Amino acid sequence: MIDMPSHSHIVCLAPALLGPVPNTLAQAVGTTPRPNLEWLLQRANPIQCQASGSEGLLAERFPRLPAAGPLIAAASGLKDKSFCYRAAPIHLRADRDRLLVFAGQDCFLNEAESQSICDAVNAAFKDDGILLVAHGSEWLLFVDTPPGPELPPLSRLAGRYLDTVIPMDATAKRWRQLLNEIQMLLHAHPVNQAREAAGLLVVNGLWAWGGGAIQVDSAKALLSESWLFEGDSALVKGANALMRGADQPTNRTVWLYEAAEQALMGGDAGAWLAAIDWFETNLAKQWVEQCKVAGATVELRVGDGMGWQIDKGSKWHFWRRKHPLRSFIKVKD
Image 1: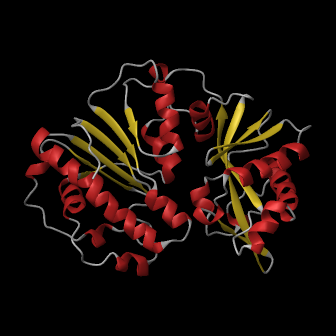
Image 2 (image 1 turned 180 degrees about the horizontal axis):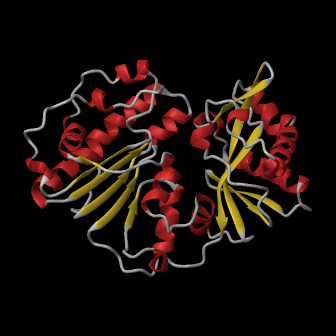
């Protein structure tokens, strides 16, 4: 269990924690009690939460923060160019005349593999104002000029056919050309030859999203209040990097919990169920205590229309009918 101080206002962004998932996976949640998460959901009041994915939820709640690319660049100290996208390697699998996209943990590359692919891309596009940088487990695509409109986030791409998510109009023509050229470049790359020999997914594609101008303003100029961001995400590190120099908050915390989203992105049902249980034990339990004892306010935003807020008076909503966690899971159409 994580040791966390008491806070009067907690915002938790937990994309895909409660779906949407296939009905079979929703049923797998079973009837095992998750008393802390159920307590929060049963006593909370619904709030507007139309976004989805970690980037979408963060932008909806804190619209003045930079997009994912420049936010991660802020944490990395990388300011080589003026416009930056978040990027990631993907696996494209032919299915008749279409390409099915795989992403997530199975496409993870070690530091040497990442650098080798970045070097190859940068050599091929050195005259096009494009620079691909690997920083830890994150990739950033710096460009002189945006290749086209904003692309959907990786979480919306995984498990879908490429032609259903990439724009097909004239404004995205350069994007399609660029991504196709990178795909051909990676096809015979030594990293992929070694991965194929080892029985691993080859990373024969690149995706970029969350583009924006490099942010030079401090968080104090971007947010009306100071927040402490918690979690392991590169987005969290970027937000806290912008917070440097701002007054340190004592009672306002943002938790970005991406484990459920990462599990679904990789098609790992067991990891998604484990993410729920980890959340129950390590986060929800302490927040219930803070609500009961300290009167904390908790916002839980999981996306796709699902969001709740519990305030000082919510703990008295004991008269509400109890429902198992499974009843809160959103099932895919």
